[in-house]
Length: 401
Image (cartoon, rainbow, N blue to C red; front, side):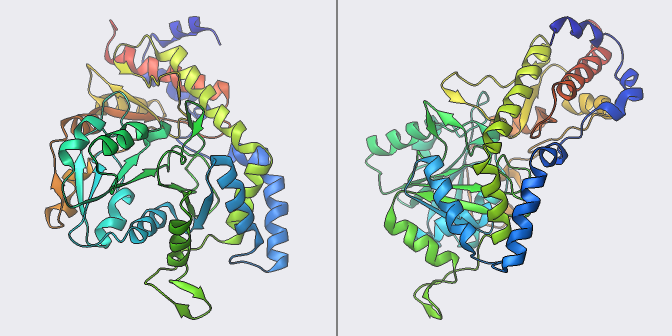
């Protein structure tokens, strides 16, 4: 890939319209299916023939494989990433009157479970360079009511979990449980240690658009605390310890056997590591072609923090994000805003209890972020076409740029 190709960026975005059929979608699994479809079909057909559709042997096998991959003692497969977070809250006995510190720059799924349980989210701002919760702001947010902290590893970059644990230790608040929301970061590493192995509890999602996605919905909880693992597993199965023996309030949250089989196929074939590398390759192409665009701030993770680019998000400067997005749409390029509104400004928190700390960075990010196409096994030519189209659009809006 030659950066000399950036000379093609002089022109208008509409010039790309005739080639729009060559531009990739925002997200697709068609390339992944071409890589692994045959194996998935064989696995799915076998499970259907065997008839163990719920809690079949593949579920337990997957839990063992994922726990080993992450480096923790226990993995509990559940129905979704949202369920995983709620089950974690229930296992910690989070209830009405408790407070849980969360970043405002995240999706609603991060806080839904704790709100359902009657707890109060305490919204804290993030840092502009990582999009992750600002550790320096957490200390002032901790009160006698604080029960847990949910740190989201946004877009695939692991949050400063060690920093938060250090803060809790120095503040003598080790009664507060740290939970990583690793829906974007499963498989990422920081100093050689994988996401989901930094905090007492970690939760991830297997929604199809997530880095490790199934072809339906699913999630998992990770911990090395055996007592917590036992409790979370019981909660996920209606609070049962035996058939019709209910010892606590639970919920119905099980990963289907077919989805477990699909995830196992991805993990066993080394497909997942290949898919992560393909995301990094796309990010490298974007970096090569767009790094000299002064109107864009690109992701710049430190070398010790391995970004897996679940989402590739830039910050638009000097020009309107929405104007640039409109220009790209005219050129036939699909983009996304993830997320357009911080949680503390969502209407539901006009009537639900919450604590709104100042979150100016979250608000500013929501006005200026723009996500570009990225998906498993996206090709070099597809990534180049995106970058060149973005260059055309910027030149059309800022001819002297």
